Length: 387
Image 1 (cartoon, rainbow, N blue to C red):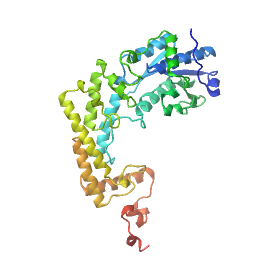
Image 2 (image 1 turned 45 degrees about the horizontal axis):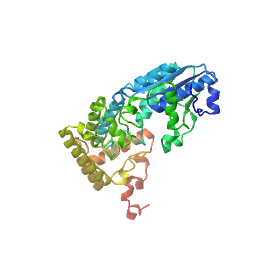
Image 3 (image 1 turned 180 degrees about the horizontal axis):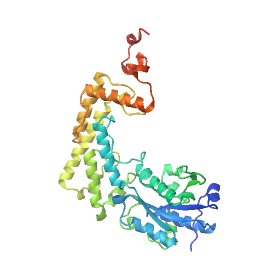
C-alpha cells in the first residue's frame, strides 16, 4: 500500500487519543473529506488506537449531489468505520433558505428590521455550515457517546483559501466537551496539497465523486454553493438531476430580489434551463434589487440596525422618509407591510425601545434626563440652555 504524507497533529490530540475517546470524521463525499478519512484511519492504526471510529455525513437535503452519500458510505465501508447520517429536523438547506426568507419578510412587515434581509447564507454568515453541519454533528456525537472524549476531525486544508491557511491543526471545542470529558476539533490533512489528496484516494482504490469526473467540478459541497466559482456554478447545471433545484433557487432569487452570490445571479448562469416567463421575472427582480439598494442607501445611519437597536427615536421627517422607503421596497416584492406613515413608524420605534428596556434592564424614560429623551441628531444648543 502506497505511503501517505504524515498527518498534522498536536500533543493534545495525541494525548486524548490515548484515552477513552471517539474519533468522528465529517465526510461530504468530496475529495478532501475522503482523503482525510483515509489519512486519519491509517494514523489511528499506526498508534494502536482502539476507540470507536465514526464517519459522519450531515445530509443537507435537496442541495446535495446524488452521489455524495454513496461516496461517504463507500469510503467508510472500505475502511471499516461506522457510518452515521445526520439531518436537521426542520429540513435541509433549501428549506432553511425558504424559512429564513419567510421570517425576514415578516420582520420587515412588522418593522422589526430596518432593511430587507436576504434569504441566502453568505461567506461571512455561513449558517449553512454552523447550523446544518457543525451544530447537528456536535449534538449527534454527544448523544451517541456521552461517556467519551470526542475528537471531531475534518478535511480542511490550508491550500484551499486564505482563511483556511490561518486555521490551527487542532483546538479545544468547549461545545463538544462535557464534565469529565474533552472535545477537540482536528484538521489532520491541513498541510496536504491537492495532489496528495488525490493520491490518498487512489491508494485505496476508490473512484472520485462523479461531480469531478462527469461535471468537471473543482470542489464538492452543495450543488450550488455560496462559495462556488463561476465555472462551478455553470458546471453544476449540466447535471439534469439538479435542474428542479436550480429553478427553485432562481425562483427564490426572483421572489426576494437578492442574488445568490452578492451581485452574481444564479438565474444568469444557465438561462437555457429557464422559461421565458421566468427570465422576464428575473429581469424585473434585478431592477427591483437595484432600486432597493438606492432607496436603502438613503436611510440615516443612526436608524440602521446595530447592537441594542433601536438607539434613538426618529424625527418626524426621518420617520416620513423611512415610511416612504419601506412602501417602495415592499412593493418591489409584493409585500403588504405595517408602519407606512411617520406616526406609525415613530410609534413602532417607541414600542421597540420599550421592549429593549424591559429585555436588557435599560433605564426607561422616567429614569433618563431630558437631554437623553431628545433624539441625539436633533439636539440644538438652545435646547440644553436651561441645564
